[in-house]
Image 1: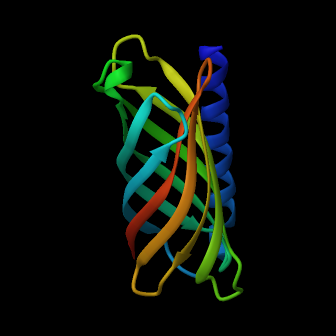
Image 2 (image 1 turned 90 degrees about the vertical axis):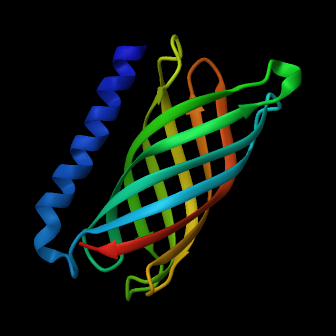
Image 3 (image 1 turned 135 degrees about the vertical axis):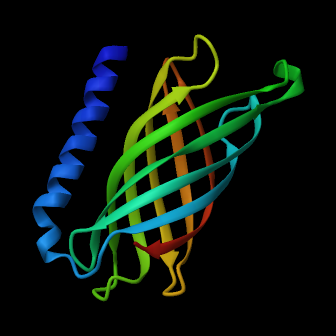
Length: 169
């Protein structure tokens, strides 16, 4: 299972990168980099809060479609009645971001998949999936409502917000 997950994540990332580079001649603007703060309410009763940060590299395919590649850190706080402490993941994801407005700004939908590497001994690697809807302003501010799930023998996840600032490279 662990090997299959790694193969799937590498394949998705490779396809996203190949698709992007094969279509960059049609892109209207250059790549973008964003830095984000993620805050959320876990969907599992054992956790009290989720917080994290990420960097997102975004390659435009055209005005409405882009390929984001995101990496960061997510921490889940464990409730005291479940032993306290926290667990952490390093999610690495690739996906598609589609702007609903033909100008390539404003409201968008986003879907990403990848791997979440556990930061504690024995946690291993989880499959990560993250759908979101958001709004990107021309100033570079980006606000999204999202779900992020980590699936490995069960699912831990959170519903939250991502507040980010992006800029062209």
